[in-house]
Length: 245
Image 1: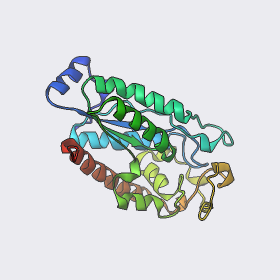
Image 2: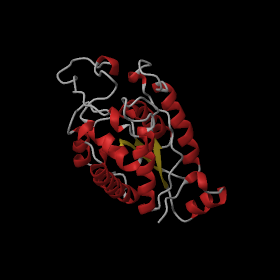
Image 3: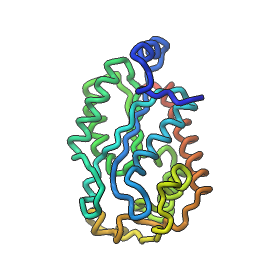
Image 4: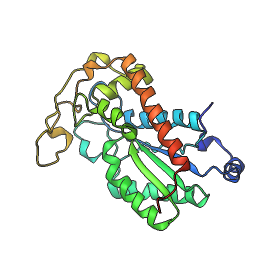
């Protein structure tokens, strides 16, 4: 089955989908930011989008157009390329997009974020939208958070991972032409036991953290299937979930 992509549909198809009882959408949200010297700027966007499309193909839940900008202020402008929204802007953009989506009758929304630091702005958007629309069912999770085992795979080489083994493996599987294998080298996680939170230039030499040298395309293929399987299970639960009270 092919994914159901919102942007490919006509307004009549959107209307008919609602008439047929479809009330859920997936919203992939990424980031355009540095990922060390070996990975491209679109890692977070690509991972969120491809996972969402694969899950849609298995569940027929429509997917909104991917938002390629997130809150990446922590990467600073130290390494050229990062394009960041402020937390307030990201939250507002998401609210405005989803206000329209909700107005058309889609009241179950799952936001799939490819970027960890989107979490706070997306939570803010969730709180605002839930207050505006009392019947709304909405959640926001990072791509790796559909299950404990997937999250553990991301954290295996660094708790403060970035462009480490998991993301590098995924890219070797999904877009190997974008991986500069000759620039792969490891950098340790320096954030353990710290009291404060620091911008990435204060914790990483070249913008990444973890052991990308461990990554293989085969590892990426297995991880991708696990992520899609976990998200498919989560979506199927969400399609029938009712409020506890």
